[in-house]
Length: 237
Image (cartoon, rainbow, N blue to C red; front, side, top):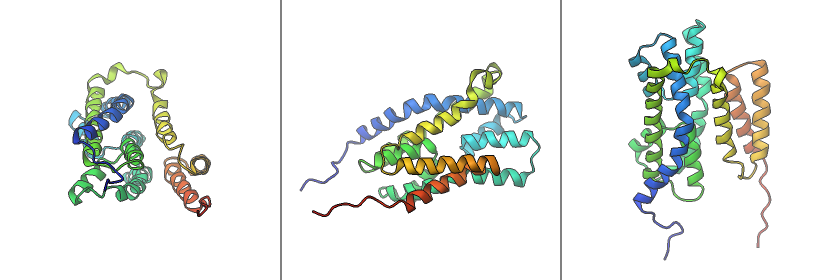
């Protein structure tokens, strides 16, 4: 009897991971370079900046921390901001965890360490059509991680050549990047409702409580909308 999911060749899974991650590397590289340049401006050493990228591995949070440190923000406030901004990763792991049936405990732990926005979007999209394999996941995730480290170092080495980020539009790359990831799910049922609820909530929270709470609360509002949304009735043959 033929399985509903045909067994795939290991090489095909690696190739699929490569095909999907390569365009993302081009989009991610400027963020890493900006972080590396800003880290040098903030007084970090090369080792500290590279260690920051290797250990924290959360581009938006890394940039926020540098900005808060430059403003002289207390440590407790910086920690709260980072937790609030990164809380979405808890939601990511809860969603993706059910897709990792082929992963053992150690592999799951490593997979969650590499779990950032692009790999979450790619893994969820692939798991919607076929089993999520370790070769696909780690090909994508490891290359993305190495590219982040390489671009951080490039920013450290050549950051002074970037100049004013706003003058060349680097300050808008991050929101455009997140918007593109979000729109990748636009064909799923209920996307419009979840998107609108989350967007409106994020804007309201941003205008009232301020950043970074709009990220977490907006995300939770979208989840609540998805949970409360009544699925369409299916006729029984």
